Length: 316
Image 1 (cartoon, rainbow, N blue to C red):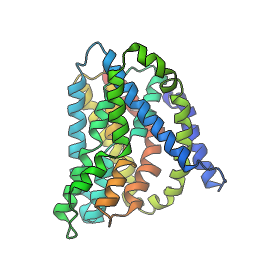
Image 2 (tube, rainbow, N blue to C red):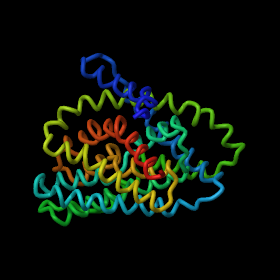
Image 3 (tube, rainbow, N blue to C red):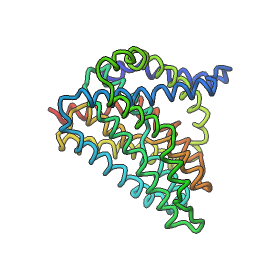
């Protein structure tokens, strides 16, 4: 699969972080720098998406893509919860369904970079689709926990506030709105930073993610009976189904792949923050370590190239 070789540069930054952590190097990214890198990427993603929508000649595919995205993030948490409730308990099943029903902005960003390298076009409005998919699964998971748990968690005002005020949600939606309002003159002034520096910042961020992921790997693999089907197999299965739905709906190849990437990703920023406050008895080794240490690298190494191949096969 020659697509793998075209993304070696991205993979190597991630694996450099893993190797550095594994050999117990003193390499570390200061927390303040790490926060800046994530802020830059999320805001840039929102700005670029909003501006692409502004200059788009038509938005014919937006509502089908949005419908497929929302359908997946509404169905996935219920399916995962019902499948895992008996084995892991209500709290852990709810937490995993929140993480895997929601989406990973970093996986989305990385997938966009891969598609650009491959010369595969995608729509700017996919950023809005991604932002809309981040929240519903978290709310559903908390509702499921509230319904089935003896230690019922309350879906109260503070829960909603913590979800909607999450950094990723604010930056993506805020950046999208700002980008949507920018004319070409305004965009020309900011694009050298937002576009030209994007891949370099992404490389440093992936280095940081690699450092963190290796530390979480042992925790994640201690649940290997659950880890393989939940963190490695089910994302590919659901991603492939969503890709096929996108193809049937007439989405472009790039949009099909991004829909699949979103359905097959897992949140390790917004969802864990909400779960920590609303489902405190859930095990972080499951809802944080599995998405970060297993699902993210799986998508980076195998998932995105796999979706590219499937989309090309469908188009033929």
